[in-house]
Amino acid sequence: MTERTPLISGNWKMHHNHFEAIQVTQKLHYRLGEHDYSKVGVSIHPPFTDIRSVQTVIGADRMKILLGAQNCHAEEKGAFTGEVSAPMLAKLEVSLVIVGHSERRQLFGETDEVVNAKVKAVLAAGMTPILCCGETLEEREAGEAETKVATQVRAGLDGVAADAVASMVIAYEPIWAIGTGRTATSEDAQAMCATVRSVVGETAGAAAADGVRIQYGGSVKPGNIAELMGQADIDGALVGGASLDPDDFASICSYQD
Ligand code: PGA
Image 1 (cartoon, rainbow, N blue to C red):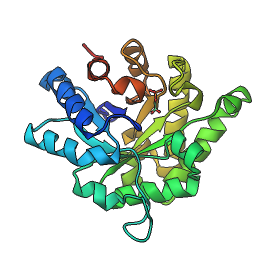
Image 2 (image 1 turned 60 degrees about the horizontal axis):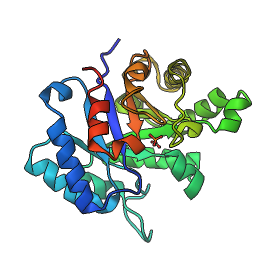
Image 3 (image 1 turned 30 degrees about the vertical axis):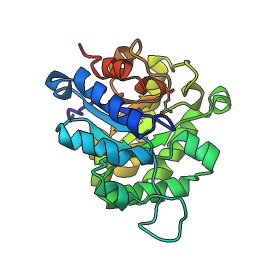
């Protein structure tokens, strides 16, 4: 089995203007050291308006923090008022892009087809997609969680080459756990992440299933990260609320200490 380097990603959502973003990035950098980066990858996903500023501070201080984005458009360019393309992000040294977050799906009507097109656009621009999936509370209570997540993963990876799938990140985020303070139990999170891995195996083969990194997301905090990360199929976390504070996010990133 491949040794998968854990990846902890901070999804800032619509928080922090570019001044605040610079401060938070610098504070996070001071709190993390070589010793952390040797064990874990750390990415931050600020709003679009912050990305250029954050890129500059990361570059100036040679920080090991990876720069990420929260979304992009599937087309390279064109008449899409208000949108940002994957090549534009790649040019700003963005290396990871969150695709198909449940808020994008629920509030902005992103379908599985759109999400699949965005996954391909991110890969074509030389970046890594973090493909999100997850069930609602109703779906979980109806016993449909696995079917829902399997459908999203199959659709999201449709037509993506196996070696590209192996390089990707998939975030399992039960919608009922996002921003609610209610985390999935580590057993449930593990079971769902194992389902995601087996769906990847069915669609892209054993090597892709072995290589793909699977994050858990949904109310991850300094107090629950270690137990979640102790699960065999959980290779990282996608952190919302707790990533806004550099102290909290740094302690999540150094969960192995
Ligand atoms: P949360 O958000 O950590 O605030 O629950 C997670 C996410 O939406 O990625």
